[in-house]
Length: 215
Image (cartoon, rainbow, N blue to C red):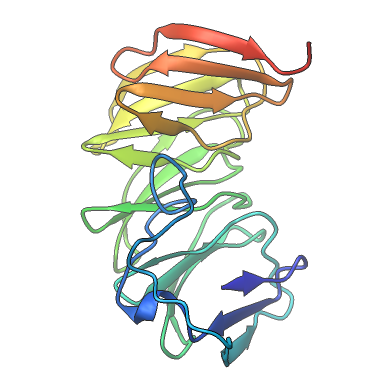
């Protein structure tokens, strides 16, 4: 899938995972490996269809795919669900901000954030299950591991919630967070806009180490 910089056209090619595998979070998995072992890419690539979203733009939100449905956020605050085979709209959910993040899906629930400060949890039919207000823009794509959700926020906090929307812990690291966290064996890694990478214990939010890329 290739999305233009202006975000007005989605182009689907015939190699998309043989149309049976899923891509349920940013960069495929919580390690952000960017690799789907079920993908079956064959050359040459063949254009399947284009979808013109007209005035609706996609700025930073990478699409995810689950059960032949595309989920993608738009800068006008809409999360759209599109049929993978046809590109037809199944439903859309409107937030009060802009969506610059990718969604994550776990157990038929879609999780994503908006610049209105809310982390949203939707059923796969587009109905709201719950939302959690962080108090500032969310530009960090969430990840879901077991029954826990992790994300960063522009208020400088990293949040861990359970899948019922209850806060487990939050850790202030003091700068804008525009990156998605990555998780490996209870170690949560995330970066801030000032060039510092943090590694936290995913169970309690304690900082294990940090590294300044600017120095």
